[in-house]
Length: 314
Image (cartoon, rainbow, N blue to C red):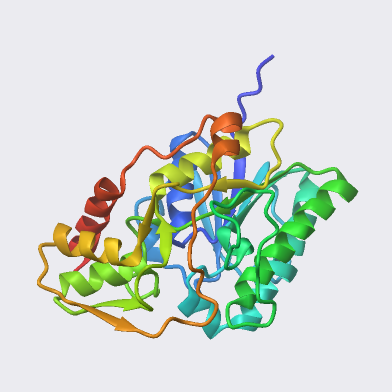
C-alpha cells in the first residue's frame, strides 16, 4: 500500500538567500517544511511568499544550540556565505560549521533522516587545479581571514562523512560555486549584488586587483534544482560540484552589468583582498552524469532577472 504521508523537511538557514528559495521549492513539491534561522544574516522578508502556508513553520533558532524536531530530511544551509558577513563573526562562523553541524547530524541519527550539507567551492581555496574536480583537495590558508569559512566548511564535510561511516546515516554533500539571483542582500559584499547596486545608483563599480580573476556564476533556480536532484538520488553521497562552468573575469562581469542596466557608472580599481582566489570554475561532469543536472539559465538571462529584483526593491 502506498504511503501518502507528506515528507517533513527541516531547512536551516531558511530565511537566507538560498534557504528561502529552497523552502518555496519544497513546498511546491508537496512537502511540509520547518524553517530554522537565527536571522543573523537572513531576513523574514525573504519568506513573505510562504509565511502563511499551512505547510510551513518558521522557528527562530541558532543551530549551535540543540533542537528536537521530528523530520524525514534535513537541508543544512545555516552559515553566512559572504566574506563581509563571515569575517565580521569568524568565531560564530566556525561554531556554526562545527558545533551546529554536529547538532544537526545527531538529529539526523535520532530521526534516521537523510541530511544534506550545503558545502562550498571555498573548500578548494585558491586552486592550483583548473577547473576544479571533486577529487581536488584544495589549496587553503588555514589561518587567514577567510579560514573561518573555508576550514569551517571543510570540517563540516569531514563530520558528515565520519557520521555516515559511524552511524550509517544517508548524507548528501554539495559544493556550491558562486550563485546569484533575487533575494540576494544588497550589502552582502558579493560581486554580483555589489555591481548591480552600484550600477543602478550610478556609482563607480569597484573591481579588486586588475579584474582578471575569474568566477563562474550560477542562477539560483538552477542551483536549487541541483539540490533537490542530489537529495532525491538514491546512491550518490557526494561531494558533488554544483555551479555554472561558464567562466568570466570580473572586468567582463562589470561591463556586462553596466550594459544591462544602461548605467553611466565607471569602473574603479582597489587592492585585492587577502587570499582572494584567482580563478574558480567547477567541473560538473559528476552532476551531469549521475544527476542529469546542468545549468540552463545563461548569465545574461539571470542577470536581467536579478537586476529587475533590485529595481523592484529600490
